[in-house]
Length: 471
Image (cartoon, rainbow, N blue to C red; front, side):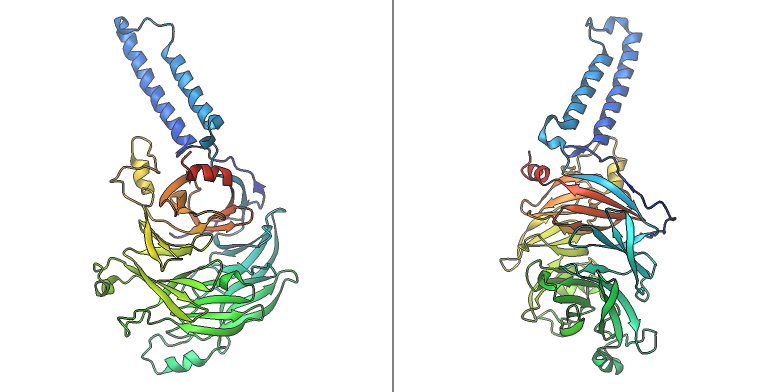
C-alpha cells in the first residue's frame, strides 16, 4: 500500500474518544443494530396504522419498547458487566510532519524514535511534552524508498539508526550473483559500507558506526536488527543470508554466521531471508525466508503456493537449530513474551510452535474475516465467531503482550491472539492505514502509526485476563 506523505499538521497531542466494546461487539455495531430495529418497528407501526384491527390493546407503545431496548443496550455497553470494559483504550494522538515508516520506544517510555517515509532523517520525540527532542541524519537504503529502521539499546543509552553508505566511492556497487568472480573479494571487504550509526542519547552525538561488506551473500542494507538476548552489549543484524553480531556500543564486528544453505537434505539449495524474530532471553533467533513459489514442489508444497521456510538458529552455538515451514506466505515471525512459543503470521492461519519442545506444532489460529467482506454484509459480523465460509484476511505486525501468552497486532482492526488457547480473544477498532506498531512493554502502551499520526493506546491487563477467560 502506497503511503502519501501528509501535510504539516499541528504537533499537538489530542485525546481521542475510545471505541468501547460490548464483548466482541463494538458500540458502532450495537447502535447499528438499534437503528435497524427502529426502522423495522417504524414500518410495523405504519402497517398497524393502516390496519386498526391489528393494533394490540396495550398501554405500551412500540416507541416505548424501543426506548427500553436502547436503555438496556447502553447499560450493558457502559459497564453493567465486566466485559463492557475494553482490553485497550486510545489515550491520545500525536501528529507528525511526515508519514511514519518506523517506530521505537525508549526503555523509560518517554522518548519515541520515528523514521519517516522517503526522508533521510530520524526524529526523537518526547511523548509527554509533545515536542521533538533531537534529529539525526539517516540515508535511505538503495532501491527501497522507505525510511530507516530505529532501535534503542536495552539500557536506553544509545540509539541505533539504520544507514547505508559506500565509504569508497559513494555509490553502492557489489556483485549481484554468486557466480561473479568479484563475489569472494566483496565478501572480504568488511568495512566498505556503513550499515548503521550509534548515537549517544544523552549527549545527542554519533559515537560509532556499524560496517560490513556488500555482496550477493549480504545484499545491501540489513533487513532486521535486535539486541541479542536483550543484552545491551550485543546487536544482531540480518543481512541477506547471513547474521552479523556486533559488540556495542563501539560497533565492532564480533562474528557472523552464513545460513545460506539451511536444508540438510538439499545441501546445494541456497536461500535468503527477509525478516527475523529474536528470542527475548537468549541468543536464539528465527529467520523468515523468502517464499519458495516455483521451487515449492521440491519441498512437497504446491507450485507458486508461497510456502515459506522458517530457520531457527542458535547464535551462541552458531548453528541451525530447526527448520520449519509455513504452507502459505508470511509477513513475519515473533516470539511470545516469555519466549516459550514461536508464532508465524501473514496469510491465514497464524501458526504456533512450542519453542521449549523442539518446536512441536501447537496449532493454528484463523485470521479475522476480510474487512471488505465484513463491510459488505447486511447484518453485523461477530469477527471473533464469523461464519465458517468467511474469507480470511492477512495479519500484519504482531508483538507480544507482557506477562501473557497473547500477541497483539493488525488484521483490519487490532486483535489479541491467545497463543495458548489458539484463538482471538478480543478485538478493538483501529484507525485506517495503520502500518507500524510498537509496544512499550513495561507500561503496556501501544503506538500505531497511520500515515503521519501516531495513536497511543493503553492495554488493560485485568480486562485482557477476563477476555482470555471468556468472561
